[in-house]
Image (tube, rainbow, N blue to C red):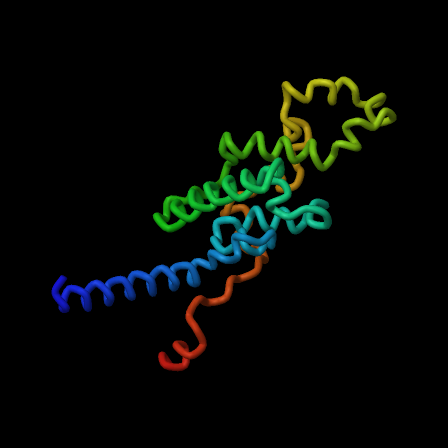
Length: 183
C-alpha cells in the first residue's frame, strides 16, 4: 500500500472514530444505560410522559424502566432497551415523531407483565379478591389499564395537552471551552 494511502486511511479512521465518540457524547448514549427517568426526556417528545409520571403515585416507587422494560433476564432487558431506544432515536432524528405517542405492540405485553410483577401481592390478596373477583379473574383476557386507565400517565398526554410541562432540560452537548470560543 502506498504511503499516501496509509496516511489517508489513518486520517479517515481518526475522523470516523472522532465522529463516533462525539455522536456517543452528544446523544448522551451513556445515559441510556441508567434507570434515570430524566434520560427519557433527552428527546423532548417524552415531556408529557415524564410530566404525567412525575405527578403520579408511581413516581415514588417506579422509574420508566421498571414499567417499560422486561425484567425476566438481563440480556432481554438490554436488548429490548436498545431496540426501543434505537427506534425512538431514529424517529426523533428524522423528525417523524407524532404529537401523541401510543405504546407499540411489543411494549404492551412488557408493561402488562410488569404491572403483574410489581402488584403480585395485590393480585393474590384474598381480601381484595373477595371484593373484586369479577374484575381480576380474567387477567389473561384484559390488560391492567383496561380498567386502571389513569395510571400513571392519564388519558391526556400529548405534546399539545402539556405545552408547559416542567421537565428537566438536558444540558447542552457543547463543551464549555467551545462556548467560550464562540463568544
